[in-house]
Image 1 (tube, helix red, strand yellow):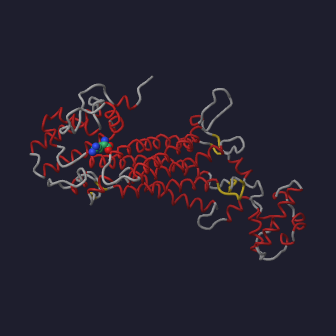
Image 2: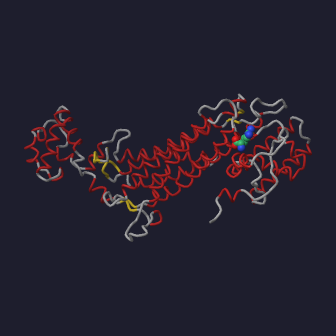
Image 3: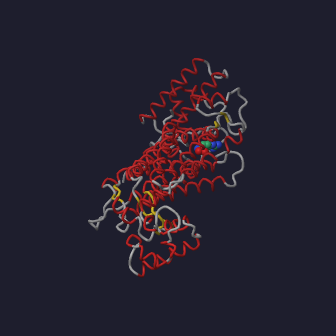
Length: 487
Ligand code: ARG
């Protein structure tokens, strides 16, 4: 058996390291230590903790609590420690309680007692809230980049299939023909809202808890606003108690991610259907499909299924977070340590699923002929015919009824709308052949491309409107890509 990621993170041995203990006579019980330790999963906050430590060192210096020389040595040691963390030469041990403890040990190893000065004016309570915000704000940008790739893959397929007619469905029954590109862009709009939500989240998450200390702020002359600015936040938290107790940003991020997961799941479900023998709308590329260990002919849509399945854990992680927060008194409580694993799991899950879904969409081959022949199936042009009668002055109620009769007549006579003649129509209802008004007759509207083209109002499925929609989306998605890359 290989080591788990967590076992790999934490090194063996080491002298137990605690940031507390002055008032304790005996050491902690093993059972407590095992319950309490979080370094095996919070170690990934190390780069952000070091970033915040640098900002804190500068503030201590400006407050006159570190000399010029001490600041230089402190920043040098922090840089050295960062490099050591990156290369793996410094690792947390099983004896470190959490990431903050491990890094303080690293600092003490480098600086001796000077390393102990950095803790002045801050607490793990404001530190951990800051680290988590920094981690998430950074990773949200990676997630948005991956969402943009999926949007781009969907848009390329939509461009190619703006004029490809497909069966549009409600209740998974043929309803009215649509442009297949229109359907693909519907998914892009959903994902674009996910990105929009994450950007909006980022604005609210851009508040720095550092300076709040344990809960009440500090008696030392620190400058929380300067720290906030240095760390890329818009402002420092205006209330130190809220600063350390608030995890809205965590819950809200998890909601945004769960919503994106639900969108991926719905897209996944469609792809599973499209790839089935019964639909046969798409052919998945070999690189993004899997085989069966027993049935040699199988080609399975595992990527889409896993996207659908993993939405379960994204939703679960949101529930975990809300349940942790419910009923917590102000301010910090150790329960809050449980915020990290759902967040890391959600970030990992999205970063795992999104590239696979983008690849699947980008490489799938659309069976245009199959889509177009099945687009009118199931009397999907019935509404077009009824609306033609309406344009000729027939009340919609009567038009609906006449077309309904026509459908039954076709079923009884085992025929379709496409094969109807003027004589057939005349037998069903005089409305169909009445020469009232100008424009096309009943047989003229019974074609799929005409039906698509006629839906030309804003938001409709007419290929020209789909192309307009695509142009507008491309502009939005370009803006999203620029935001994610920080330009
Ligand atoms: N590991 C802790 C967490 O993740 C850090 C804060 C601990 N604070 C405390 N007062 N015990 O929440």
